[in-house]
Image (cartoon, rainbow over all chains, first blue to last red; front, side, top):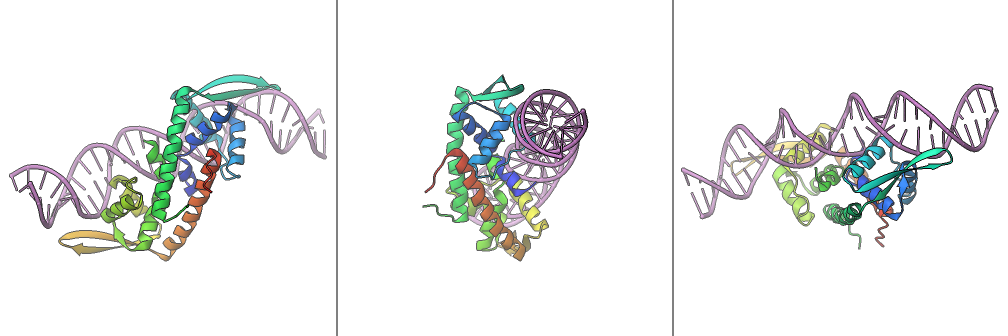
Length: 110
Length: 110
DNA sequence: TTCAATACATAGACATGCGAGGCATGAATG
DNA sequence: CATTCATGCCTCGCATGTCTATGTATTGAA
């Protein structure tokens, strides 16, 4: 397990919720969006992406629906009301967490 | 497992290396230092702290020595040369990672 | 005497990311 | 026509991590 892998662990679901808060999307497209918005840093793997989406749906933070495009089945996900609320909390938690780490590391972002 | 727990996973070792780069320290004191420098946010548990210290020592990033103070045994840890190098890399990796998350979340720190 | 704080350590429960594999379609390449 | 690449979804098993609970022990205060 690389360091980068361990770092992503707590942020993956938040990133998925964030991307889906912009507009409903599906697995493959989500990976592309995350790749772009992270400036190429986060290349989500299928073995982590799909289980994460399923977890979020199981917890009712996401809802899914199938659509067909050019002969390809796509499973779209969108935020539920609870998902939107959770995203708000997770964004705040991320900011507090990163502030904590920066504090210990003596990194001043002002 | 709380979200905060998952977030700390990738940063814990970096925080330990950072604290020990300031001066050698021992388990209990490290938890206090991290608690202070994170503004009370990170209360390291023994079940994650000690295994992490042992991992870092196993990987030769830390070295340990025992000392006695007021009848209490303390196991001090200090950075090795490799540990110092690793810390530098991890600090850079943390900054790249957090920039990536902030990018996806649309958080602008300028 | 009893309790809290200090101090180290580990076993087991539980959770998560990833590599590897499976299955399928459409477009481009040779 | 065959092959390869990009698109698209899914799951199993492995490695690894944190936390709770527990064990051991000393010091000092209530």
